[in-house]
Amino acid sequence: MERCIVTGEQLKCLFAGGLEAIEEHQQEVDSLNVFPVPDGDTGRNMYLTMAAAVKEMETATTSHIGNVGEAIAQGSLMGARGNSGVILSQLLRGLTDGLKGKETITLQEFASAWEAAVASAYRAVIKPVEGTMLTVSKSFAQGMKKAAAESNSLEEALAQAIKQGYETLMQTPEMLPVLKKAGVVDAGGKGLLVILEGGLYALSNGSYTVQKMDTRTQPVIETIEEKPAEEEDFTYLYCTEFLLEADPAVEPDIKSYLNGVGDSMVIGCAGSYIKVHIHTNNPGKVLDYCLQYGTLHDIKIDNMYDQWRAEQSGQTAVNKIDTAVNSSDVLDIGVVAVGCGEGIKQLFYNLGVQQVIEGGQTMNPPVEEFVRAIKETNGRQVLILPNNKNLILSAQQAKELVDIPVEVIPSKSIPAGISALLLFNDSMTLEENRERMTKQLEETKTGEVTYAVRDAMLGEQEIKKGELIGIYQGEIAAAGSSQESVVLALLDKMIDEEDELITIYWGADVEAETVEKIIEQIEEKYPELEVDSHNGGQPLYYFLISVE
Figure 1 (cartoon, rainbow, N blue to C red):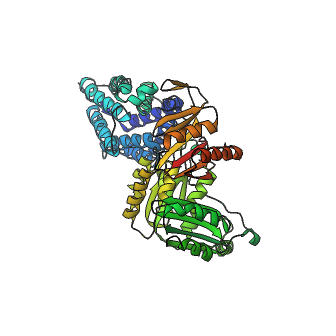
Figure 2: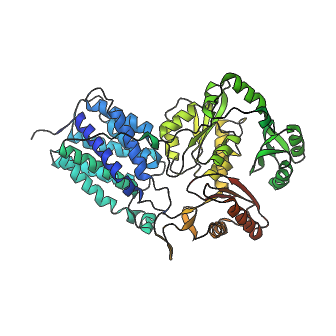
């Protein structure tokens, strides 16, 4: 029996067909999100990752399968988005490693390459969990190996392996209780099989059409174009920031005093340090007042008028990225953070972040954006705050693609990232900052208030589509029809007797009057706790909350 040969053209057909399929079915895959919240973006992330892979694939100058594979790996690596996209890119990377230097391969070699692909994906995940996309990919690879030994047709082998993959996919709810509770199969596993099915269809029909990726969907690093300012705009001249090592109990007194000496105030407590940022005309007065409570560290005072004048003499439109790129000052440690909402992003800038990548729920930036942001911090070393559980793998992958030391602080939410950032100290080493900031994540409890995108069950309680829900520790902890009732019910689950501070970041769709009512109710119910609030301006999530 003549051996079945797999060519570069077949590989192109397979992945281009897979791209068309995942584009068509991405919403179906998104709908398999475990929680009924507006961030079910597994299908979208896999589609955009595949689009980047296929776009690069089309640049391959020959039809040698090794060259085609190398392009696929490179494209998926840089275009990977979210956890599902990163795992997919690792599958493709492992698969194409077995194709290097080859013009064609046998079906048996192709099956072996899928085994290598699965091993690569498992290595990419720090704590692999069965019942996920990894399990489905392993089942598919096992099916390919078995089929390749029995068949001499690429299409037949793929069909048999996909069938085995689906059998495993249907078992994922039995492997992961959270899937069974939600009544769904694993979204990443479904997306992978959709891609493979699309590839099989394209191979069987002998044609494919490459879809162009809509560039409007790609998040970019946030830039802020500053309009030329008039001199009278500088009500307060000096941007003043420092760390105060003191008893955290003095924070309310400091806030009360500073409210009368400036604006743009950001104050947060982390451990034995209080981070202070304020625009004022009397930085000495600010420092003198705070000295009575403890010792000052990392003092930084900038004359904002001088900065404005320097910018006007050089260029009229300056943004955060351009400032970092063109500056002759090289930082010892640069900081990158992911955030969405004007208030949230400005908070990050005020706290010393050099590059803010716009992203978060439903909008996962690709690995390429992390790489770009790392380079443009102008730092010899870089810390990354992903601020979303779905972006930690992307940040870690970017770390491997640059030639400077990078540490990823595994922050899973905006409030947790801000809390960790309050402990950043540029006089300490990268490793010391990583340890301090990572430890701080364990001290911060975070909750979110959003809305249900589909009907769901909360224990015995039925949640209707559109109803407000509060999420804490990966569970739906509260539900209701009013923002006030859900916030209070969520806090009731979050707060214990050791807590001292509640911080609320309200979103773009929240009225200031509602915030005032909520704060009044919180202060009445928890008079012993301090309440801080910020207009985050984030979409989709009405409130982001931290309790410390």
